[in-house]
Length: 144
Image 1 (cartoon, one colour):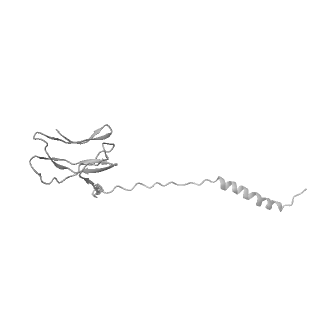
Image 2 (cartoon, one colour; image 1 turned 60 degrees about the horizontal axis):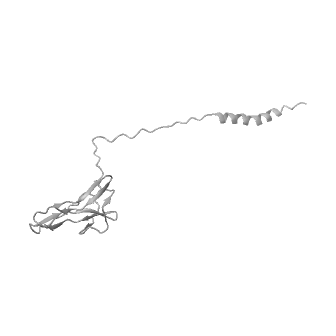
Image 3 (cartoon, rainbow, N blue to C red; image 1 turned 120 degrees about the vertical axis):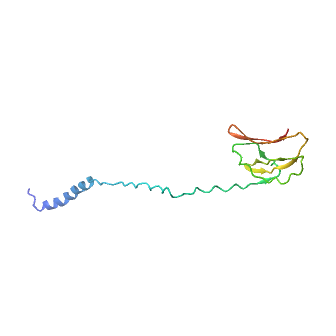
């Protein structure tokens, strides 16, 4: 049986898209990765101011130690608060410095005060926070 010659162009139309498909799929695409250089450092003559210090914490001042004060804490107390001593009421009085107390997880400043000497030879032994291992313990001041 003989095939007519006009089948050849028809066969080419069917086979050609399949061949070109393989060529397209096997083609590789190249991608370039461009890395930008880091920005240049600022000139050495330009002054960059350091950030401002944080504002001082608000100090809660009390006259008497809180009843629920904690004597062991894991955090160091804040730096001492500057106090105005006022006038010495007399020669038999001694200034007892204020101190930080911890009450309910918050630091409060117990104000310093003038105290009358219990006797002529008495001396005030200052109390304060002492680091014991990884925590801090408060020891009360006392007369000696």
